[in-house]
Image (cartoon, rainbow, N blue to C red; front, side, top):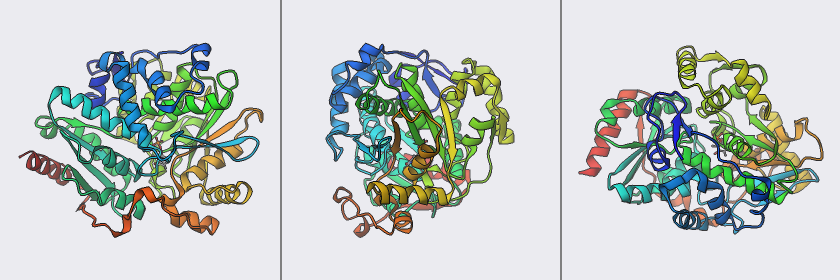
Length: 467
Ligand SMILES: *Cc1c(COP(=O)(O)O)cnc(C)c1O
């Protein structure tokens, strides 16, 4: 399997290459050159498999020659063996129509563990072959950081620099990052928003002062391997609800458009998906883009669902590329226009390609609390603010009522205890697997929102720890 950049100006790479590269050298994102597909019979034959085996079958076409099937299976068994639930991503029924796909049974209580536990092991496997160290730089609105740090802490040949917006992640999220004291982990709190942090990380990938001396890798959802791992649970859920014979709809709490893009990939591979609903909070650039073609970034408004407080959704570029005829040079021009103006219109092909499968909805704070109360009072389930936004979108979507509607439960409610308590009056307990989070020492560096200072910090500390 070969991977091409959405901006058409980087050499195609194999799976090992894209996993270690993250962002393409032309500023684009990697996608498979063509989509592998499964027939309905092949999909039906996956019903009832253990999660690690299902993951191996769904992902193998993307891995190509980079791993044998036995190697991939072994990595999946180790990654998913760390989950607290034997089903890894169990489905919970809410009412006759609505289901929750619980993606938060990993070590850091958010869906990002599903992909990052695998990615950490992919890094280790590929780096051992090359014997070159990897310096990961990433930006987090909370959950990526903790999941990535858990996945790479203490691993050989990897070092991680994780930027988070100071004061804009929850206490639990911050402590899950800053109490990991492994010497290969560097936490940086920057003054600014998540978008500011993400823009700095993107700039580092194109900065010769870094790329000239360090081998830079990505754990954000710009990394293809993450999206690939997330495709699996769409298959898992659909198979349980009668797929592939029966179509299933999904509502996805969305920030960087990674998780919902994985659903799009599942559909491109042949999984019969009725609709993918992109659920946003008041930071609604994606809702505006999908409903009237206006992709224009406003200011970020902080909300109780911080992992969705994003105005520029990196992975949307992948959808624009795939629906817009896969014309890398045209997309490069379009994206450069967006980067200059912070606004652009989708082309007709891009809009039509997207609206065939995607719907969208926006939930403000009241709608979010209302969904949390509905789940609690009517179904006896406590959901986190991100999941609540997905649930609101699911309940308001105009979809054939015979189609099962699955809301992706992207975080454990205890990760956002204060918001949950405000809405429901009930304070969720942290599961025992996170340990004594509030008794542990924290370590992080505060830096101003100044690119040069952040870059210099990375250069100095990466060089320092390598001796
Ligand atoms: C990261 C995250 C999201 C957004 O996912 P994207 O892949 O960035 O769209 C939603 N909810 C939670 C809890 C998250 O951690």
